[in-house]
Length: 350
Image (cartoon, rainbow, N blue to C red; front, side, top):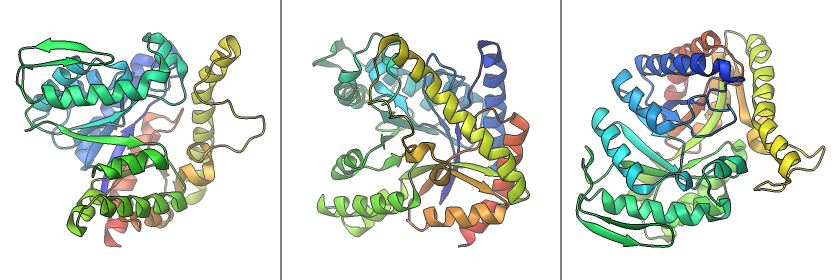
């Protein structure tokens, strides 16, 4: 199993933004020094739930501030990006990192309508924009003259410069928040990233994924390769004892999710608009917001035991978010280090 750190740092006030961005850079450098396989970056705008906001510019910084870990997006919101500009940016970062780039793509947030409003994008067009933009990027990365006349983009360019460092193009992967989206990715024989789900749903989806790959005509070696390139997300905090981990992680996790819905609720109260129906009062939280399914915390032995169920699905990589909500850099660094020193060996030993 591959291990990673998902840098998803919140910043409670504009005055905190610069400090949190600098701490995120330090966290990335520590992640690299500790030998993690990938550093993942998020994209969210206007609300402080991701302090560095733009994964493209932050990835460029990481490309020169780190030396071994791959740098991935989980994910870039493609509805908000021009595909030629994005293809150029990815080619440059691919060169700066000497091929350490993972271009993780998604249509855009399914929750925060203000992300789209701020960029003047109709959120109902997000999936169609994503599909068209991805096709344009693959064509542009060929480094040849081409024209495109589509629903959203009308383009004519002589050739993209620079061509990517990685040929024929940087490694790409899609995210899937739903079972339907995962199956669509599988039918194309591609790996995917799964958002936070219960262990039971994770195992079920991985079995469905294998079945869909076989139905698409992939042999067992190709199925195994695709599964090994898939990733699942968990929020993790490791401390010396279970009690200490619970004391720090539970309130941090609860505060993180309260902060993530604050702007969404405010916009709905002001405008009456939301992408998905707003939850009814008292409704059970979804899997990604429920402590029982979304938070893995405890001593190294406890965390290793809890994550063994994820490893048992055969999935190739774990997207691990260590900094949760208002947690300090020092707490995060300690957890990150303890996970590397004691949890990774235990999981690999299984």
